[in-house]
Image 1 (cartoon, protein in one colour):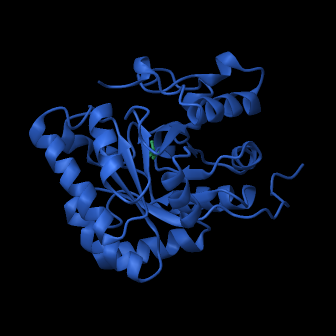
Image 2: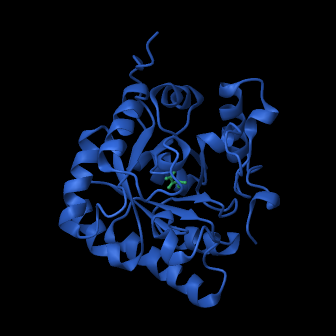
Length: 271
Ligand code: KIV
């Protein structure tokens, strides 16, 4: 049996996603790590696939994303790229592989050559120069604000960010700077829904929420959470396999509920 996709459909691009934002059409993102899931995502019509460094926890058994290496990221990006010829594929740059713009360029080159169409980096204003440098060289960037798991120890745990005015103001300013620097997408993780809406309304790049309410331009969930494989799932995630007959059905249900504005509901949102 082969999982390598032989289909050659029209690929989703950065321009497709910008148009969806302008048209008010939500798009679907799934964080996944292997070829069969990538093929299933393509068949379900998932617009964006994220090969997240969450694979450190979901696949490799680490407690955080910090131990994930470039070699591990490349291995999984290559597998996902073999399995999916339509979705836009984002590859995370792992911990401390983009501490300077020059290092980011080298790391992004490797992840792009493995098959990603965009790289994701975590952080705010300090990354504006890096985003601009990568954008000028033709490398699309997905920024990531709010709960940034690679900064786990600085943040003091996996906590909701932007609850007070000072933190919220910083996230708003960071989003504006990264937008201006040329970022193409923005993941907002674990922030109050009102803050996510304010940022979504003020930036030109599409926003992808996870634990950020339903007002973002898109949603992302980790495949393990969608399929109920997580022992202690976060409040914002949902096991869609409970409402489906099989794995493709769970993915379809997630996609439909996001497109129809049913997910996330208030139970899966931080107010
Ligand atoms: O690594 C990852 O999967 C992520 C998502 C949870 C946004 O960054």
